[in-house]
Image (cartoon, rainbow, N blue to C red; front, top):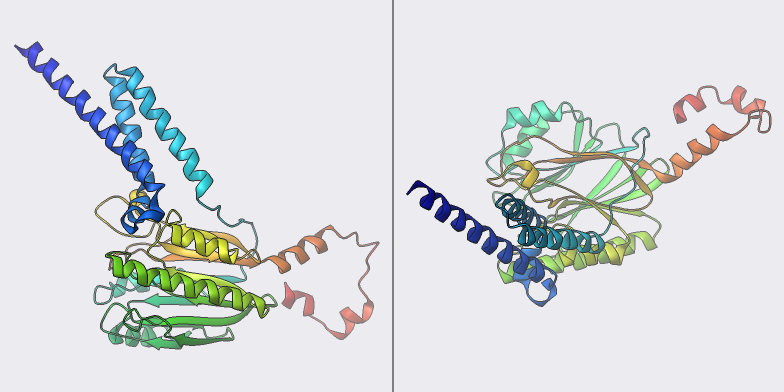
Amino acid sequence: MKATITTQLRRGLVVTAIVAASLATLLLALTFLQRLDWRLDLLSHLRLHLIASLVVAAVALSAMRRLRVGIAAASVALAVLIADTAVVPGGPERVDASPDLVVVHANTGNHQLDRDAFDAWFATVRADVVLLQEVTPHTLEHLESRWPEYTVLAAEPRWDTRGVAVLVKAKRSAEADLLHPLPDKDRPIAVVTLDVAGTTTSILHFSTTRPLPRDNFEWQAEAFEFAAQWANEERSEGRVPLLVGDFNQTPRGWQLRDLCRETGLSPMMLRSWRWPLPRVAGLAVNGFLVPDELLVIDKSAGPYLGGDHWPVIASFAADGQLNLEVELSTVHPEEHEPPERHVDDRPGEAADDT
């Protein structure tokens, strides 16, 4: 009797694993048809999760001596992973250098911000530019009183989820402005302009609505269209564009991929959407779209501060400054002696530049 129950249970598990593998395979195939329907685009953001579920099914089938089916499932998972790598644009180059710019993007969670947790984390960040979304009037008041070493360059606190604020370290010269180009309930977009190691850099901080339902998906498309136009205009006027925010898209979404292709920016997204799964399974919807002129030194997602997103932080080095440092480090002193007057007339200049 016991053997019969074990056999039936085993068969049930085999059938369950086969059904799961078949369903995952079907859904994975549909993710590559994402341009046909906005719901398929939503599904594409779960492609890695579906691949993982297919691998689990393959391991389970192999463990239950269904090797052929298990190997087939594993082969499909590998093929989809290779196809995914080919489709998703690569990230920016990373270097080991001193940072010229440190940028933080954080969702303050509207009314859900844990102020003590935020202050404890923010004290360790040492950011040059802080870009906040879902900022309420109470949150902005707290930030201004608690962090006097930062200047609020632009802010539009709101009681809904569309409030924004731009904070810049007081000793850093920068300009900021708020734009309202989108029909999404007058959602503000922040623009910050500052000098990064001799390069004028413009940061566009924008957060799109979730692509659900269809109307929101269309609003999101308009936001990406505006961002692409803005980035190309900034570049044509000699400024380096950097896009930062909660894009509510992973690099597997076609809208974000198109934005990167049209602007030449590289996506650097971090797992930052908090949902009822471990962080390793979180969706990478917050991050940075990085130009070639900025090289990434470090990137990370911060701790939970309230709301439904983790904050993200990145440090950058200006490409031109890094190249200059490399050239200076490889120059032979006997071949390129600095003029005496450079040392005598401008004492301390080299130390300041460094």
